[in-house]
Length: 67
Image (tube, rainbow, N blue to C red):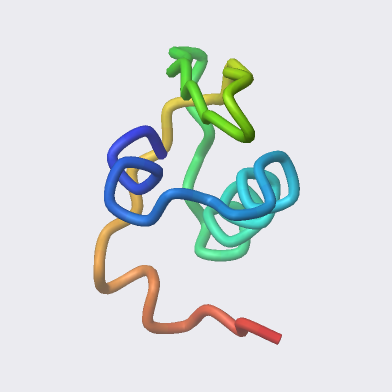
């Protein structure tokens, strides 16, 4: 998720991060006990989110319903 946030900086912070976690769960990805920290800046303030480490393979993403 940290890599995804670097490439596609979320515009809605927590909402986007929770959406990404929901997509991982839908794809059958087991959420790790390991965590990542993601720092997002908005209007000069930095918000730190601690999220499970998640790896999503391309094949697993093909069956996602993005509705």
